[in-house]
Image (cartoon, rainbow, N blue to C red):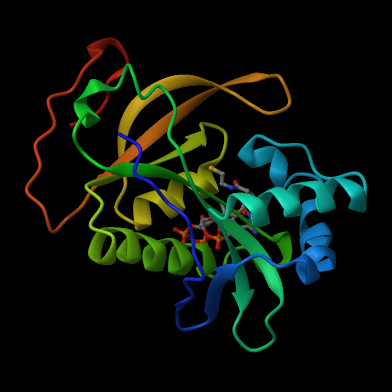
Length: 201
Ligand SMILES: CC(C)(COP(=O)(O)OP(=O)(O)OC[C@H]1O[C@@H](n2cnc3c(N)ncnc32)[C@H](O)[C@@H]1OP(=O)(O)O)[C@@H](O)C(=O)NCCC(=O)NCCS
């Protein structure tokens, strides 16, 4: 089942990054990376064509309080986001009944790709969710064309779980992979449902 989650003022620090709630003053940093074509599209949303679009999404980030701003430690510049989202198909994925988890999703500004920054952010959030909030599992997905996201998830300990056709926010459908990571501190053996889409070994 989906665990209840809000950031609730939590700040996570890594070697190079600070993860914190978004603020209205982050609008120009957010628009700067969200307006670049080919960034959001890899995560299933269209790049922002106006700052008004960024303002609308930013106000949702602030009110829903489940998406961390990823900031450079030295300057507090926002260079990405990491959401702790509700996973879908909760009624069908009965293996998670009675267990607590969420799905994470992330985006990084293009200028900062290839420096291992997202694995650093993802690992820190996973550690918080598993060690402090005691989650049982986390899900994370990627469209199969997105080898960079696949690689981040592999490096962070996720394993292929389901082969699914996933809808994008642009109204298209893409073949994708949903990955699973079970809290390494727990000895959980899930009794998996729906073998037709299952790829967990
Ligand atoms: C996916 C993403 C978050 C990766 O973040 P990152 O901090 O660059 O991750 P890494 O530095 O660990 O790089 C991951 C892999 O991408 C590849 N890569 C790195 N820089 C690259 C670049 N500029 N162009 C293409 N591939 C690149 C490398 O193969 C690397 O794997 P390696 O460490 O084994 O060599 C980032 O590319 C991104 O924001 N993409 C757009 C949004 C997105 O895809 N979100 C995920 C949705 S599921």
